[in-house]
Length: 152
Ligand SMILES: [Zn+2]
Ligand SMILES: [Zn+2]
Image 1 (cartoon, helix red, strand yellow):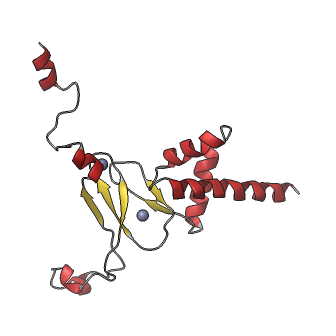
Image 2: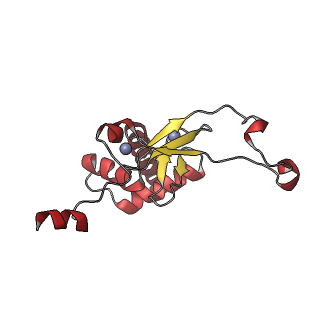
Image 3: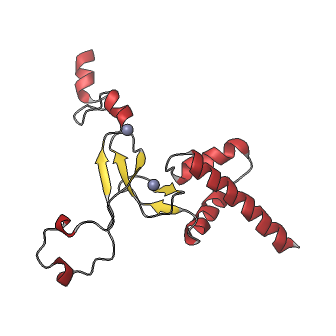
């Protein structure tokens, strides 16, 4: 009886996570938790994280490691790639030719030296929102020394 109740509860929790993954665009674990908490204020962060890990183990969701940022999660478990905005961190789906044409790699003996089993591709750049806001690589963060000098 108890086990049955527990597995029923797990099913609901997985469904909530799955909905969050569908509604949010490649969210972080935190964003998933906050999204579910709006509807179910009593749910704990641990419960969400634990069920999210289970879903990844079972192939129901994908984890996208983002270097220098929090991992993001994906409901699209088919093979695909991503772009990442260097200003706001937004991640979007990228489709590629599969497999990549051999001309893509320029090393002479690549296949001899290395048994390619796959590749990870992340395009980095600016999303359309950030481009419109005029993000620039050289823009100083607020409160920087340059700004303080102007106020003197
Ligand atoms: Zn952006
Ligand atoms: Zn994706």
